[in-house]
Image (cartoon, rainbow, N blue to C red; front, side, top):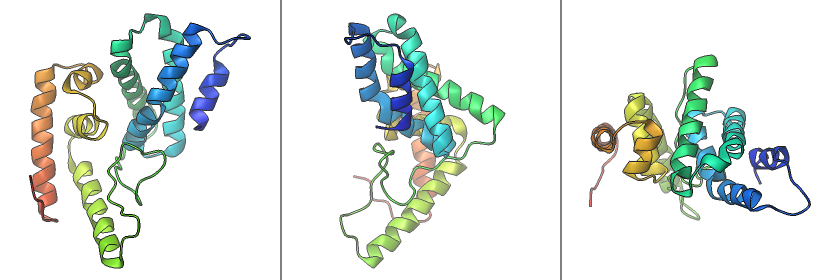
Length: 197
């Protein structure tokens, strides 16, 4: 269990038995803990800050739990996390985006995984180089395009969910995503051969 999950569970008041409210909170915590942490980690590239932001996101979830409907919980959590990241970036430092770093990490389950069980030296070298190009390509994107690409293509949110998180229309999400994918593909194609199927 991640420290943020442990801290949030201890921060929530409990009685002798688990209440329906607490069961609902724990269900959300179990379902969204890793995706929210992964999303925040991609945006701040700082493990400690990502833990703090994810923890604060779930503390706020607990505080507002009675007002949140199941069908809007995902978008609500991502929006709160996004707002907390924005606050963090304003206070601390410019944001750095890292999608891939040394293979699939335990805290990055939604990330891209190019690692085979036992890649040979040539495959490993290619994977390292590809990761570097992907990171550089994402870093070169404007924030509004990078964010929609991370939410939809990496976090697997629907266009509707991403629109709620970004506080914009579905049409805007679709337009930004199309431009982000075009930029990503064109920029990455300069360095690697891409086959579209």
